[in-house]
Length: 538
Image 1 (cartoon, rainbow, N blue to C red):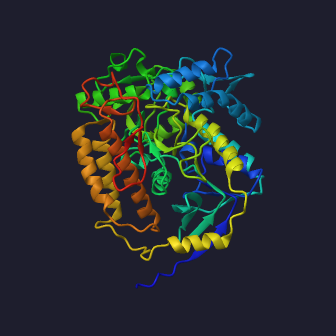
Image 2 (cartoon, rainbow, N blue to C red):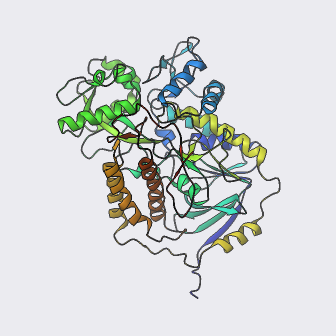
Image 3 (cartoon, rainbow, N blue to C red):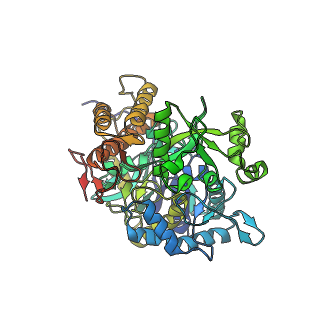
């Protein structure tokens, strides 16, 4: 028998482990920190969560002329019949309370005198988007971190990559973390929250930060959790499309303020695809842009704000204007080249209305979770509200249902030693340099499983993914290999679900569906770890 390699190992215990430090994770930690010890872990240095990059705003019915009923109706309409009604009810009814609480904690949103300035975005019937310029996510995170900072019960680790969850007798009891130097930290906890965000890095073109590699979804799947709605990947219609520039998101609020989408011939085109024009839902706008790009053999279309007052644009969208100026583009004088980009995972770990997954002791909130709020297509600016509302609910539920006895170091040490395989290794198992494999993988997903899919493209993608899936990687690996393994796991579920769902609906558009979404199947597709991970209709 080959002796086990020696690794630097630390055993840690806490009451509550929060994996991820975006809006959902920090909001849950605040709830938990008043009642027990909380350990927050994330794999990057702040600001590294998608929450902090969110520009547009937070959708909430605060205006007297608006209502939670109207917000609910808009959310359901955008979701194309696949929303879970009770989850939407929770979101829109508790949303105003959570946002007012945030304001009490010091959040500064745009105002004119005593009134908050509410913006309108696509598929909202009225102005209900609360904003802080075009850096709303940053402001919300500033407020939450300031609220959490005085709580001495909350501890934050330096960057660690979470390799896998610890499961004992059908219950999640902690996680295995890898430090930047390769050391292992095993953390035991009464309850664990996944708040790891999405998986935009599965695609070669994404608005997501580099940390969005689907880690939480993949870990939940390996631990035996149910994942649902994985075929629904939302592509944001307007991300910057300049050579050698990242796919920087151009907020929906620009179109809400009157920006016009034009093709490369300079012609406005959205009214040909939907009566709502630029204010149609994201799935429709992204698919329309893709069609215009195909027709004109172009790599982009244009988002035009040159007809709007320059002073107003600079005031309302400072981040957008300054970012574009860095690439030599004055958006008040020149239309912006844009193209769709992978933006938001609608599917994820299936949860109850309190964030509980199908595995005892494990909760999920935010983009990593699938509570059914978004259906087949997310309504603009509902994601920040989701993080606030369901992060709070998950924290409350963890307090109410976690095991009462303290987790013991000896218990976690023993469990880790029993589950630790003989073949733990830090040696690469990839036949080519990992960077090359990752690039090829992302291009495969973008070209074959992007905005428009069909049976042939999905089958080709699955064949390639199955080759990557056969690579035998150890559960404890380098961060880069761990992320690649997680992305392949998530991508496999996206592709398999997309193959099962033959009808177009919402963000899932199949070019080989002759009815193009006229009679979609309104069931859901779920995955649970098995020898045949094909997915099941529920």
